[in-house]
Structures are given as structure tokens and as C-alpha cells.
Length: 269
Image (tube, rainbow, N blue to C red):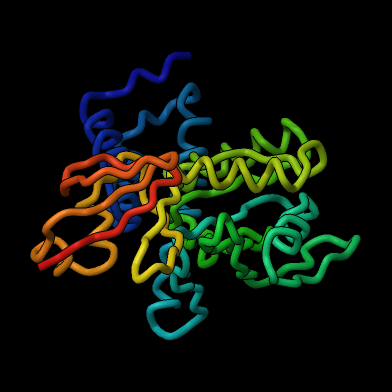
């Protein structure tokens, strides 16, 4: 039997899809439930709506408890980017973070070994990337860390886990850029490269008083972006910059586009 949604129901559904906060989604879902046709053909739809509403209410309550001083999962970003590792229990998250960083999480043969986020710093050509392991319990307070991260790494053993995690992200409106890795098929070096390249960053080098230091910038950055990373006064007082690329030296201006491996010396006055 077809559901035959009314225009009013479809309007409420649009409100739900466009809602930005959990509170607005809850209001829209309650309206969808009220307006959904009440016949046998719509019973499955109603059941799904009620389940979604219950889940949103649990997540909203967890957030309210956090604001009142309950569990706090906020982790300050450090390094050039923050990357969250998400996966089911015993998928290899702890192994990845222990091999790529200085963190030493407990690794055991029993399930749900990690109960709180584990943080470590991964090195890439002298710059640091922060890795955060999200516990497989998928506590909403901890999963919320993924919303502000620069990248989410879905750690899986097989295609079934991949589909399960992708569905979880869809149901929980996690829109952060994500990649999939399988530590049972990919070696740790491949995973490290995969994480770095997914961040769409380039490494350039600052040259000052003969000292060269690495800096990460988004692909497509120019000398102006480079100067702003150091201090805004470098843009205000900018005269020119020397740039070394593949052993060639050039004098460039603020709009000059940077490439991987460039060495830059800024002159102000």
C-alpha cells in the first residue's frame, strides 16, 4: 500500500532536512510523525521516525549534560590538523594510533578496550598532525569530536563494517570529510600517506636567518597566506619574498602561488 504523503508532511520533511541543530530536527520530526498517514502502508515509516526521534533526544540530552558539567570530550586542536579515527571494536584503531604516534593505548584481544578518546601526534616531514581515537562505544559525546575535526578515518576490517560505519555517519549527520582504511590489508606506511594526502595540505619552508622550518598550508595557498600564518604584520609591511623552487631562486609578490617543497624568505620594511 502506498504511503501517499501529504504536502504538509513533505514540508515538515524539508524542515527536518534543512535543520542545523538537534533541537530543530526534533521539532521537525515530531511534526512529521503527527502528519504522517496512519494506515498500514505507513507503519514502517512511522516506526523509523519514532526510532530516529528517540535517538536524537538521547543525543540532545547527552549534550545538555555535558554543558551542565557532565562528561566533557572537548580536545583542543594541536598541530596542523585534527584527524579522528572511528571504527567498530577490534578494528585496529589502537594499533594505528600506537604505530603512527607516541600514544600507547591498551591493545587487547577482548572488545571495547578503549573507553575514552586517545590522542597522539603523527609526524609528516617535520609537521605534526593530531590523531584522536574515538572509542568503539560510539558515545555521542565522543562522536561529536568528529564534527569539528579536519578529517575522519573510518577504520574497517571488511566491506560490511565499511557499510555499517557509513550508515552510522549518515544517520548521525556526520558530514566531515572521511576516508576508509583497512589495517588488515594496508600497511601502516600506506595508511599514514593516505591520511596526509586526504588533508589536502602542502609542506613549504620558512627561511629566516639561515634557519629553515617546515610549515603546512592548504593546497592553492599563496605568499599572502604564508605571511598571515606567521603574523598579519608580515602582510602589512611586506616588500617582497625570495622563493627557492627546485634550486631556482625568484623574487615574488603576495599573490604568488606556492607549491610543495617551496622555501620562502619574507622581506619587510
